[in-house]
Length: 264
Ligand code: GLP
Image (cartoon, rainbow, N blue to C red):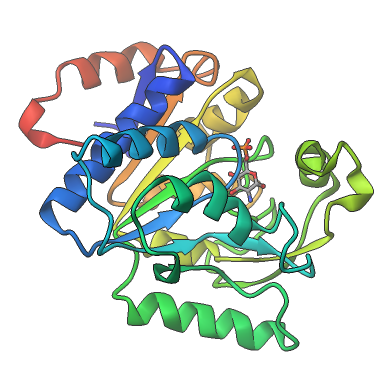
């Protein structure tokens, strides 16, 4: 058994189906479970699956609560790339979770440190996150915990790296200058407190980050490597994102031989 369970599937769409299976199983057991939601392209396959399963009656999220990982600082309330709006569009509007049950850090607060503390309290008051959906940046960041982030960090203000701003410029009309410089993000310790972490990644651009995350030394230089310390972390990747894994064959054998009763 490896520290992180790695599941390699042929296509990005299948990463969504595997992650949605874990979410469906969680809500079958606990209809009021707390879901951690992520932005970016990687979780889109998950949200598409969840939408499908809600519409055919396999999944019911009416009693769910959700928390976002992060938010840009200073974007106007109606800005389409404000993460609260992104999650509304990509996830909330397509399933049956009430909008009022979805929470994010307030990137427009006058007192940003107070907003970070309030966010930590809100997660705690909800009983903590049961299943956290994660993507990974090309530089190994999770949420907006950039390389060099404290592995013990809690929700706080961060400055985005130029690489992340370049990566995310595609959502801002390819204009890097339009990407905010600051964000609020759950810290690494906040994320690690979730009971199950499900990270999805696809495409060759993520191959090095996935290799480091699963097989590299744990280091603040690749924040996602902290998942190796989590008691229940599942990494679901497509073949391209798995292409740099040294032990890909072993992960495939392990998963193929996994008893079905074990679930994810
Ligand atoms: C952003 C988000 C992260 C996300 C990352 C990768 O920086 N804050 O939560 O994991 O991008 O995004 P994508 O899935 O689009 O590659």
